[in-house]
Length: 336
Image (cartoon, helix red, strand yellow):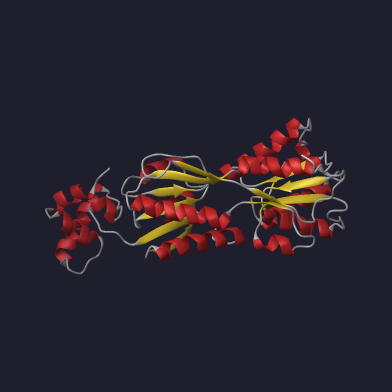
């Protein structure tokens, strides 16, 4: 693959001149600019940004790359990281990874348009993260176990969260429990599902294939999955939704079907978004430390930018929040 050095050599100009020309800088004459652009065309050169062309100074900006910028979970995460950035005198750019490998988010990583990044986006591949990260460009990932040069991860213990939610339902007397899952490429979803299966297996309970439905971590998905379950005419006694957003959609579908929560069916979510306690009934859920995980990711990124030592991986604990969406079919044992 041609580099800017190759372009400069073919055009017969200095490396800095080639970089200025490709950036459209007005200090380069039209004649020289045309010569550089023609050399780039002949070599099929694809500009990769200043960090790969010339040694650059810091931009005093970090990127937060998310699968989606909407929804209460992401908004709280954005606020927590932005607070850390502002405290350190940095700006923060939040961008979506929609479009996958062709997205603007991936270009931010590959072209080093910022000083470092925090990534919570399942559709950005491990290879892209490993190729982009380095001592001069640190990356904190929040949705997978991945480490390497300039790369660390901050995670919530989602497997234990899935286990805790399911065991809570089982201890309440529920034996038919469905799990409504998130995206298939989500590591967090896979871990919550593993926790669900572990609790079911320990209780000698089996997951029914007809209840194996996905909701993609969005309200509409939770609504549609619950509607599909209702259409089959055989409902479980409890549903564990992989996040609160899907639980909100599911609650709407159940209400439309005149199925009472928790009298007819119990539901439990994951995340503990602010809206969860204001639903009818208030949602029992697994709280993950959204603000704390975002703040930690931000602090670690700035420690890496300052060349300080950090661990390769961090795992945060979860907490079960009991509200009113789960019916106790048998008395809970509180003496343990």
